[in-house]
Image 1: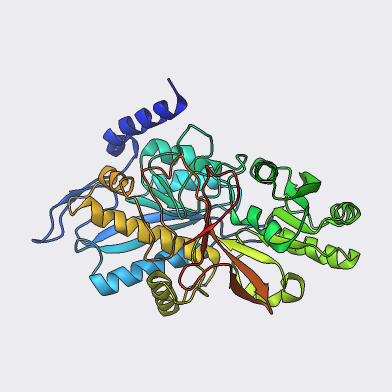
Image 2: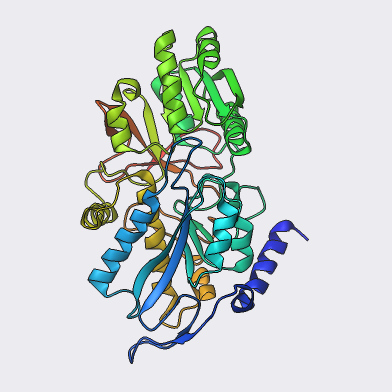
Length: 425
């Protein structure tokens, strides 16, 4: 029997007994005359309680993902104030746990011992507690950057895991992307790839290498995936890239690491363009524009600079300002997670359960978070990677959308095509 079939059968069995294995004190709750009673963890007459685990404290790289909490809270404020919550119940972010980079398993265990209906947001460097969440059957809405969301071909990700841009990420497959398309668009031919000696980063390097070769996107003249996570010293790598004539760099390291590498590039006189994932950070870019100008950032969501502005982006900016939250990439991820959660609740119906919510989301064919996304088809998104992204150029410390059209910021690629020809969406 395939591992995919085993996983799905295990999940079906788990949700049937979730109230027994979750360790919750489950009560039957109603919400007045208009809505039926709901007998689920975290649900009372007046509230639907959720909780999340986020890497807020990070002594390794310094990058905090705490904005994910702000994004969920801003969306909950929007729904609670404009719609009175969902089915007469206020949405409550009851648990905000910090795994401090290395304590994910312990914090996930703590979350599952609490009285919450769903796990959101989940935005972490490492995801050691993923198996517990999968086996528990709790709906999970998070930042899909790890293989735990699904990244093996012919083995779908857990059906109760919903990433902000899909779920399935095949790091090694050479999936078509805007980052692979960009070098040829810019006339760059000599590519360098830099990664850490950890699985996720090294797999990213392998995937980009496979994609470059598959789509003839350039010539790889330098590759190093032996860097220690969090290292500040890139002198040897920059020297090697300079000697190899690198003019375009694909970075599989964190944004702080990329900044340190660019500082070294300037010291050694290496002129090469980079494209950064997970780097849509306005304050950071403005503060470090002397190093970052001329480079590119990719996002899997419509950037705030999109004109005309999608409805979801307008709502995000309005309610984030009202809630006083931090504007960051992970804040947007948290907002999208919350939108997906609420959309699924509404589709599940007033007699909602965890299982009904999961089933409802998995039947969606075009979730866009009101224009924030190019569109997720959840009937396939657990086993097919997302291929749409927006590209932005850093100019004078600001993000400038590139290569899209008015109201259509996304470059989308056909994973079955033999060439990289984007469709603007």
